[in-house]
Length: 210
Image 1 (cartoon, rainbow, N blue to C red):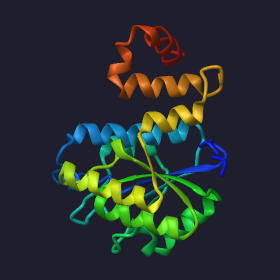
Image 2: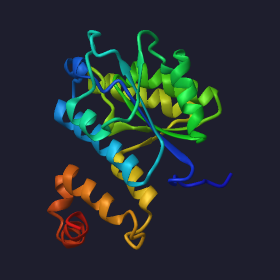
Image 3: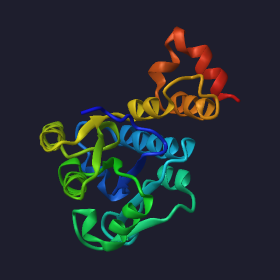
């Protein structure tokens, strides 16, 4: 069966429970790494004008509000606040928001990988969606639980990716000039290792400063 690449016309990005109260649940990654991955993914949604569905508990719940850095990027973008249900589809407003995107390819990230992300992704598969799990914008208590959850999702049919792979597949080539500056800026801000690769530095800086 032929593969259809991710594109701005067939994909939606879904962010699940990137909340300050869950920061103590992140084991193998630092909070800063998880924040950076989630924020980079939100920026990619904006650069490529991809529909984005964001969900979290209520701000006064133990999990608390979204990461401030993520909230700043989201601005007035709506957030589906859930009071119950580890599977976000348990909330009819979330399910309606997903359907409203009109997209069958869902690029998902969340905390925790083994609970809210996993259950939501599995239900998305059951509903006929093609699901991509962004591993570096998701996290769990330990590396073992994160990796086991990803293995479970892969066995079910979810495609594991990272945020750079998502953005690169949407961008496809630096010759796509409309989105190249914005995507280059995301790389420059969130992937320090690329800033030190001589082969890419000049191109990234050029686009990031436009």
